[in-house]
Each structure stands twice: as C-alpha cells, then as structure tokens.
Image 1 (cartoon, rainbow, N blue to C red):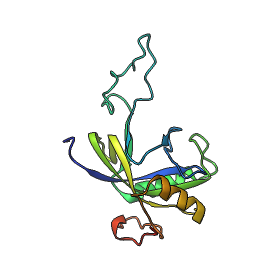
Image 2 (image 1 turned 90 degrees about the vertical axis):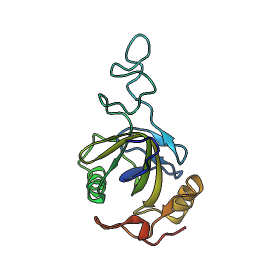
Image 3 (image 1 turned 45 degrees about the horizontal axis):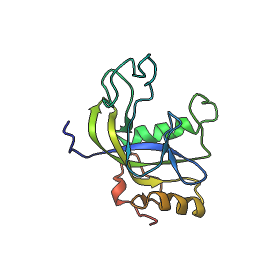
Image 4 (image 1 turned 135 degrees about the vertical axis):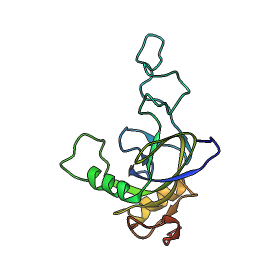
Length: 165
C-alpha cells in the first residue's frame, strides 16, 4: 500500500482520567493526535534489537507491531463489548472507553479484518459514560477529533453523526 494512502478504520481506546486516549492491548498513551508506531519487542537480543525485525520497520509482516484498526464498525463494537466485560481480565482495563474512527497512513499492512499501520490519528469518538469535564479534557488534547453525541450503529458512517464540538 502506498505511504501516501489514508485509510479510515474503526477502533476502541481506553480513556484515562486526564482525557488521554490509551491503546487497549498495550499500556500505551496516545500523547499527541498523530502517533507513530514503535515495536514493543525491541530490546530482546544483546544488541537491543527485536528478534523479528530491525528498528524502523514497524509494522513488520513477521511481527504484531503497529497501530490497529478494523475495517468494519461491528468489529470495533465487539472489541468494546469484550474489553468492558468484567470477566475478561487479560487486557489493561480503563474506567472509560471510547469507540470511533482513526486515520492510518505510512507503512500499512492489510489483514482480513483490518490493518496495522505505522501512523495513526483519531478522527471521531463516542465516549459512553464520559462526563462533560472528561469530554473537555479529550477535546483539549485532541482538538481536531469530532466528539460524537450518539453511539454509532454497526453500519453507520461516523462522519455523518452529530458532533459535540
């Protein structure tokens, strides 16, 4: 896939009390709107390199690194249901979750259900259970992100839903 191609995908984030978005499978904060992936497996060998690939090759076909997004909203809704299930205890847990769209670019690897990308940026979010103070904090950290006022339907186009900001 071309590094100039922008791809819109669907995903879930954890939201910390200060309004930062968090990856759900790794304890990783999205400190800025646009984030560049780094392989979490580096440092395994004597030279400090990943056993699977050299640094700067993220995402790599032989690794699981990169920022993930689903092709369909229904898959992200399934993730939201999974990560908010109190019986599931093998992922990081957060008091609040967000679901929405993100834009992927750079090096992108396509899979059956979605993509892994070198770069990602949130585009729209719905934050069930988010207080006005938390939504304000999210908006302050990610000013270009549209905060949605309604839960997206599985087949919906998130760009047409009413926004809060």
